Length: 259
Image 1: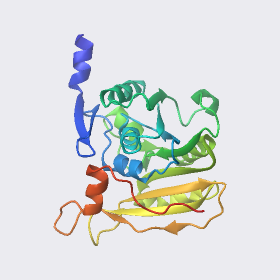
Image 2: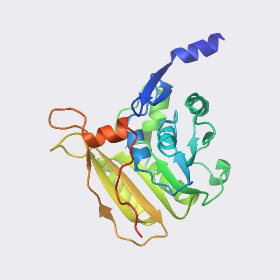
Image 3: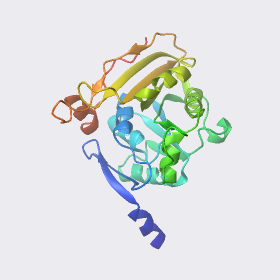
Image 4: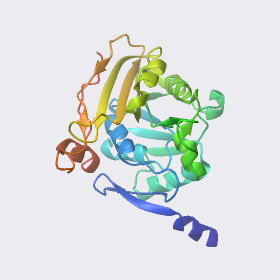
């Protein structure tokens, strides 16, 4: 009982989608925010489709997607066993456990160890580690270190895993730092076609800080840069587009199909 109470003290409950979802996350470890919600809004699986999230953490992106799309089933894959258990509890707390499942697995390890079938999912989504070792200082919390910092091969490993698990003609969607766009294109272009890039701007006139990138397996369609999303207006208030996605749970309404 004492261990459970201590664990509860290290968690913080956050509201998502206008507090329609109540999700517990580690208070000092890796915490999901706008990036996860934007990624969930960017996903566009077919009706009654299946989605896999790589690096699902406490389950924010997976649960936001399931809350928006009552017809889909979502699987989250996460290395940290404690986060897997937390995500499962978050799914149960939000009455989504029948359609959202979380399991432990190492994306950078042997594919066979994941216990997932190749070409199994209609769409794979991911919010991979944003930095390479040496680009930023090591973080004091081991969970944040693992979630934020990879090595030179990490991004290629995540994309390779996603492409192995998505079905033919299925989609792969990532969110990342805007500065990483060139690296993302380098590893996605040989594997995916019809790439769609959506820049995310913090405010009017500012440089993009994030990019959403979605591609399709077995496609030869050309890449497109779609209209960006501005999170705040000139007065520093949430934009209508941001409110629709972050608070109301709307999809990012872009034509991402490549025909």
